[in-house]
Length: 257
Image (cartoon, rainbow, N blue to C red; front, side, top):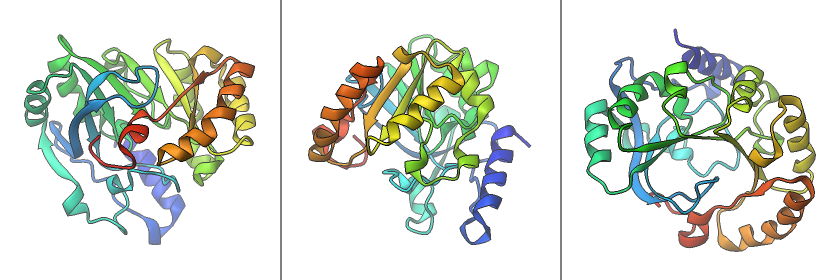
């Protein structure tokens, strides 16, 4: 069994039988469990504003209380059969290649649950596309995958996510990402008290301040604006970058943008 499958099983057991859900990841090497594919501009991270294709994969090993993509994993609220499509790698490749943007953002859910299935897609498109992966930093990427990704957007979850510490704090993958020069750490901030937790993680894993982004949590432009002012001051004080949610500011809390 793969590391990602083992991790999901362990975390599901932790949450208890009443909350347990399958990983849903197809056992077929070339099949992906897809939530949605769409084109937009990258709304977060260091590549913000870049025209991009988004490949959103289904299923997640965390349960963030403020998650705005629960349709990728919350089968108590959403119907899995309505939200998840099993697609062959060739079907995904053909769809991504047919669109104009050459930057592909692989997101979720937690896309590294399907890293084995992602490899043929990325290898096929790598010659004329760039790739970003958005991950919570709980799963270590394979050496093969690591060498193909241009930007890692790593978003370790803080206590404000209401995940258990054991579920969200995985030392081995976080240390691995901290050592990658193309990995940037994006922290979702709700309140000023979250900053101390960020500082502790930065110190624990020796993350360069220039690769840390503080992003306001929010699902509308007004909420983002309220938090961005004092967050900017924290970034100035600590030498971090100010993150944003451009897609939310432009289009609100909508899917497929």
